[in-house]
Length: 120
Image (cartoon, rainbow, N blue to C red; front, top):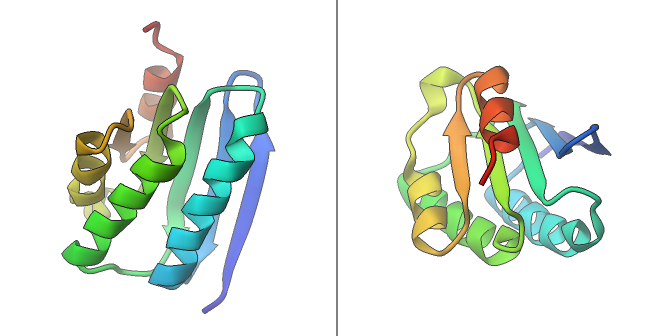
């Protein structure tokens, strides 16, 4: 499976973009690596842009992705994932939140950034 990855810092948040067709195993590994790498990031908030990711995952895989996000990214204050509106299921979001990560899924980048920047 081919996919592209961008990791960078904005003025007030970290930004990760995933595009293409990562496999389930590749996405889980990526979340784990982001968890390790994010310990040294300047900002404790992350915008995870998945709008260009084309891979479809089963509900069971989405639960596993949410659990990995919780395990790997729980040290971040907030994680906002932006996906194509038709792909919002909230399955991974609920699994991650149940396991201690402050994550939300959005269809619009502006709404995601507003939530990341909100006090609290």
